[in-house]
Amino acid sequence: MIKKVTVLGAGTMGNGIAHVCSMNGFEVNLCDISEEALERAMATIEKNMDRMIAKAKLTAAAKKKALKSISTYTDMKTAVKGADLVIEAVSERMELKAQIFRNLDEFCAKKTILASNTSSISITQLAAHTSRPEKVIGMHFFNPVAVMKLVEVIRGYGTSHKVTKDIMALSKKLGKVPVEVNDYPGFVSNRVLMPMINEAIACLHEGVAGVEEIDTVMKLGMAHPMGPLYLADFIGLDVCLSIMRVLHDGLGNPKYAPCPLLVNMVSAGKLGRKSGEGFYVHERGSKEMKVSKSFA
Image (cartoon, rainbow, N blue to C red; front, side):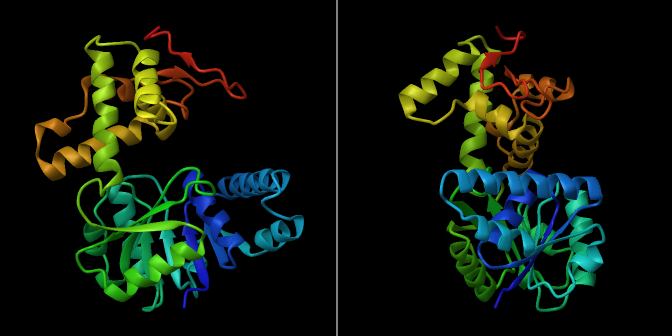
């Protein structure tokens, strides 16, 4: 039975995962390389819980209990001690994740399940860096974690049926809707979503329509909650580019080649919300959707 969960990485996804685990009765260890990152994460978790209290979705007593269940660490070996499940939620870099999984295989008890929150990197490849491929699985949460219901549960080539069943059950206990998928480039979500975003960027690049026009068509015509270009900014253009490259390399089809405009924007540091500008300008504290001067 899974009781203790360690989350590696205290960024947006990591603190969100720690948040939902703590609210659903799990003992949580949150680990990052710096105390500053951990302090920011805990402040974010508390702020998000306060929002839930304001909406009557959480009580002050439940908040206090959840926060008390989270411990923070900067040392991975200490953070994973006694963990039944480790969820890796660091940046989407294969070499970094591979090293983490090698370390986890060494540091963790043999019973420990090793999961990755990767949005595109092969679970089978990550498992190959361990001596326990049957216990390696993907848990692809969506941002914001506390709100979004879906968890893609990615079964690697060697992932056991029992581990898959346990992670499906755990996801439900977290209040999520788990969907089991097999380990192929982009899984389901990004294999469908990212080519659409890439095609929207190509429409802009080729002068088919402007930023707002493309997003309006998809919002009003296809009932999407936000347009693909705004969504790309929200995700991070560097992340979009990384996933498109995984699709292109893994599937070998020219249709998955990233649009040159996407490549250039990432090279120029225009990464979307995280950098303050992408297809839109993102001013701290402002909810106005203002198109970047580059496309206005």
